[in-house]
Length: 195
Image (cartoon, rainbow, N blue to C red; front, side, top):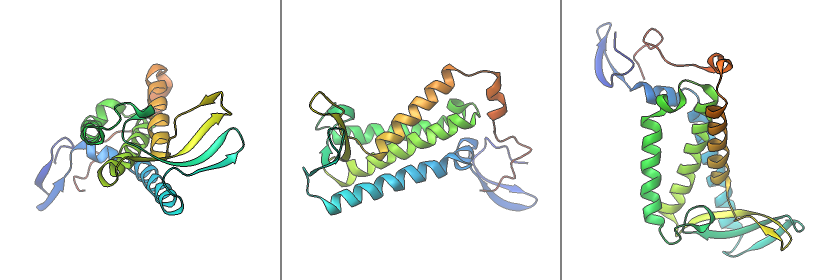
């Protein structure tokens, strides 16, 4: 029987099969759906904003609290490293590859951590597409309290990243015996060796 940690071609029951590494299989078993949902929702909303509005547009949705805007951010969160889209794109690719490679280690088989990283991956990929195809990441959600407080504009990808990181951190900090029930992993006996 092929080990779930081996990758490549092998034979099982006389048939040539490809087996992916376990971290890829575990990523595909659940979080990939959330990754795809965050990514698609992010790209769809950004497309609608780009299609419907001119750059710099501002529309008040909830007076003094919430506006729909259209800006492009060439930096990271809060405009940090502004003008470094290429460097941030490379960093995004490195982070995505690291999360996928170390997925089993990072999640320890805990379902909520798997979903949290799925949301993070969807967000990173959503902003990465903008960095590659556009001159900056499209941000369009603007929370503020009149002129007193203003949160930097953000998008769905940013929500996926922020919520995913927050849930992951809370899960790690407050891990206990109750999380054992939420673990699910692939064992050699469960793995049929086919992808």
